[in-house]
Amino acid sequence: MDFVLQNGNFETVTASAIDDKGFEIIIECYYDQVIGYAQSLCRNESLAKDLTQESFFKLWNKRKNLKEGVLIKGWLYKTVRNGFLDHIKKYKKETHLLEKAFADTLDDVVSKAQQEEIQRKIRMVENEIDLLPNRCGQIFRLSKMEGLTNIEIAGHLGISVKTVEGHLTKALRTLRDRLNEKIQVLFLAVRRLY
Image (cartoon, rainbow, N blue to C red; front, side, top):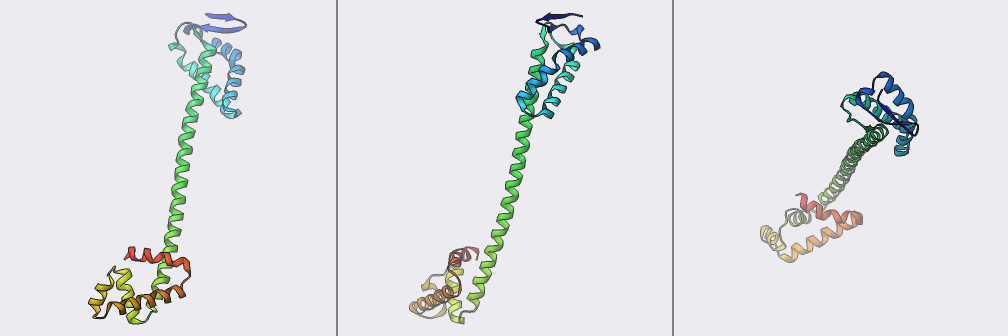
């Protein structure tokens, strides 16, 4: 076999030297060091074992394509490091996708809940508008829901602008008394929806 022994380790090897017996010697010589390095990177024993096993597996599969004089220990360490970086990229991508899915789901739930609450409040406001006296409710709808000006309403109904203003004041006061103050903000939303 063409191993070069330095300081009790096989530092370089030729491709022809990595046969079954040579590979066993490499594993015996470097396994503990490589798994120790992997554990120092990932701090996870299971992942360290997987990375170490994968590095030796790649060494076996690529043994015939290794350059002459390659440093086996360095090659194994580099393979473990690259495997760990690949794992991090995959984990970050998966984590990002999970976080995005969670955020989207949360947005959908919150949005749906908000929509339902807004619709409930709009129905409550519409019910209260329906309870206004006929002329008062009619003028309120023309003003707030159809967006007509007081002058346009007065011309349309054949009444004075002051009468329109009086009905609007009465409608707003009545609605304000019947509905809690939080709903007042929805008057703007009601107009935009119609």
